[in-house]
Image 1 (cartoon, rainbow, N blue to C red):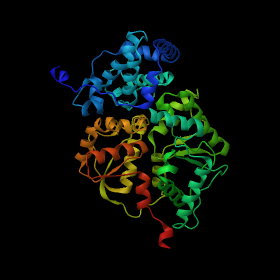
Image 2: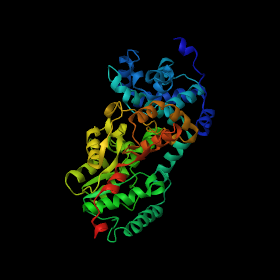
Image 3: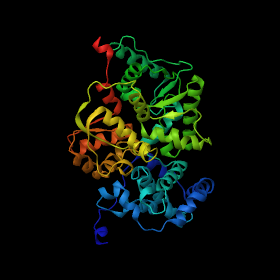
Image 4: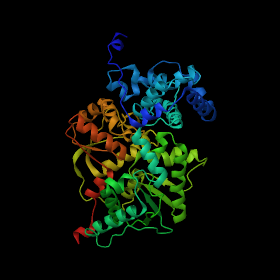
Length: 445
């Protein structure tokens, strides 16, 4: 325990959203909101977890924050629960505004909700659920980090997370179609095609910052002869930062809009781009919040779709990617959906050599961007980068120069880690590699 005494004192990172929210709190409001949330949404699940936890600390070994902070128990999963929900339950909701400010920082920025700890708990306690409930309380109290709250506001006002207006969305698609037609003269990005086999949905940052992914997807769809469309209306963005800010009402609106758009177009299924958290929201959390037993329109992730295109021969690989690569397992589609082997089969179909990280598959370490942590913005960049030194060590140990990650948040997190720890690596989506390596008959004509 002596090492704990020597730990650096915890320094509160300044954040306008958190600090202003805390300044508005009163003891009475805190107790009222906590009581209402726990009574209406805590229920048997929270009680079972609290009553079951043996305080053994085995979950600690699962957490990248814990390992990256020299095994500081404050960063262990159980330590985070102790600093948040346990204190609230012990004091019957009678906690101070200052406590809420500290607990919000723990819940929003020091836990990625990656669920790795649930595998290490001998009872399978889902600590991500407990931390998520803490975020829900903070949201109800108006104590959320400024950047992720702005994203939730964008979701509410525009139904996408990047404040993209409807005409800007359509312009982006037309722009990418025009660019792609320089390469493939008869390529189209179908808009509002009713009865198509597939509605292709993406996350808000794609038309804003990563339009090349829409370009590449259009080329892949064209080469594979897919009957597809994209919507021209709100509902095209499958992302969901409201799920992570604790604003479940907005989350429900987003998922309803996404599925109702697909139903309006009469498509047979939705194919999602390479995003992990959006898949979690669409496939698991959002539809359950709406009380739906399942998805009203079948949904597949890009990894599943690429696997389908490659294994059916609709996409053929001309020359495999010639460098050794490693594959990063995104938490939401691996621990959340079990797509780890499928991701590897796609990678092996594209690349000459796959070098595994250790550990890997469902045991892989999180990118430290997920769970909305990267969306908490620049004030907390160092929190997540310094909190994932172990990921940098894991990447460096592979000895390869390229990491493939089929998830937007993972790209953001890994890019920062690669830059901060000066790793000689680049990062790619599976779509990048498919586009680079696939047969393009039009190019050979």
